[in-house]
Image 1 (tube, rainbow, N blue to C red):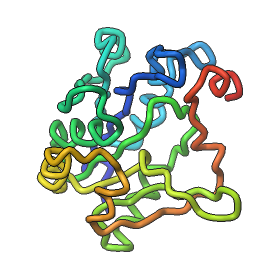
Image 2 (image 1 turned 90 degrees about the vertical axis):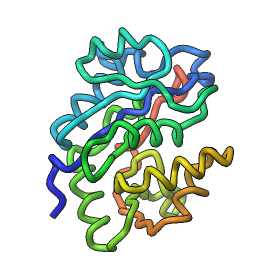
Image 3 (image 1 turned 60 degrees about the vertical axis):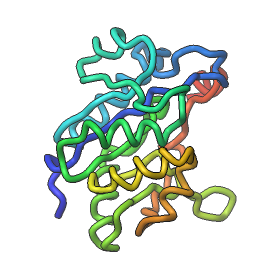
Image 4 (image 1 turned 180 degrees about the horizontal axis):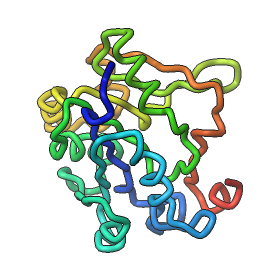
Length: 195
């Protein structure tokens, strides 16, 4: 059984927020609290250490009470840049990632991903949810072995940025979750109001 103290959590808040008009998504309020704070409160009890990956408003993120690290890659390179930043600052054998804009992800997310990873003897475990009658992977909800750092450094150094292209080079397992609404994110202000 993977112990929670063996896992570092990273909240991915490094995006441009372009679909939300360029605002910093993680700092948008949901029920009176910034989205990133919801993620911190939900993920914190599930992991041993936690950090935030953000590229602007760093002081605002630091005020939430976790270490903040900007992307190690330039130009808002996407979620994979957040994975890389997390791995570079991870001091535990495992890293789990969650996006900053999904305040209702399950409170047993990490335990279930860890169980799936071990059962499949995989290197990466990702959430899969039902969508239109098929199970669809949610790769930003991802538990990985920290030893994958060198692989990701090489992959991104070659100019690659697609999560699924990188994960396809490793032993992966999809871990099914029944409730797609738990993974509903707010990419636009309208979606934030719908939450």
